[in-house]
Image (cartoon, rainbow over all chains, first blue to last red; front, side, top):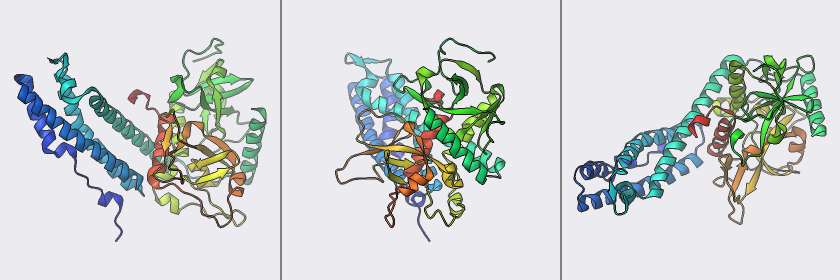
Length: 172
Length: 238
């Protein structure tokens, strides 16, 4: 029996990590009591999670590069969608931290850093985009399978197509 | 939209039909239309049915009195799109999008389609497949045309393969995981620069008994997704 990328691909989801859960816990605490030690713990938890997140993205990229079928690609996208749902919770938490001023900036910037927050936002956008693209491909597939019976060109159609192409090429 | 408007269009929308030097062209692109770094976009000629027979994926554009010939897409400078004539109806626009995605994605639908590729005639020993990287007289190109490959059309859409691009866009697909050279450059398929070549010219440029570099499914799928972004309705997500 052959093993596909989809069967092999089971990286550790960073949203299941201790750091991710710890960050959400400390996030709730620092919003209630702004104590320095709790802020530092929230920051450390976030940075730990972010390391795992970056490694996870590398693994996803590798899995996508090695994909040999639609099933493999679907498995990679499913992982991204699952992670994106958890990242949305994280981004919401960080958004609420933006309202708390801290060290001449705000708590979100101190805990996560501007670039990292942007990276999380970009991940959400690109995953939504990929999901939308796949839905459009699926829609086209349904149309294709239900609409097109005749596909090959006749000899006359081939000749006319070439003729039109050459005519357009000559005029451009 | 009825009648002819001679004032420059404030925005170029997919499905708008323009008069360019007496010929009608319909805007096929959806994504880069209002992005200033893209100065060109792809349009399809609109022919009347008396002039030319429709092919399977061509889309009837009733208000233009003809059909969009998706097998003859051309890149047009946005500056030439000033004389808007009419536009596609919502259902025609939907067909335009799905048919364009079909054109550039049919091999992505199901791997079974690959195995049902019609057998090549005896006088055409080389089958073309999406993802092949071929050195053509216009440079290194990647076959991106699923529909023509599947049906062995005499014309094939290809996209240039470029190395070490400085200004990357959303429509440049990194294929370095599958296509490398000795100098460790990064290679990209520039989907927005797709153009058409005659199939025979492409197959004639293949050296006999020399393997053809071929992208794996993952990279080919990324290219397909980029075409869905270019031709589909995804602007709201950006």
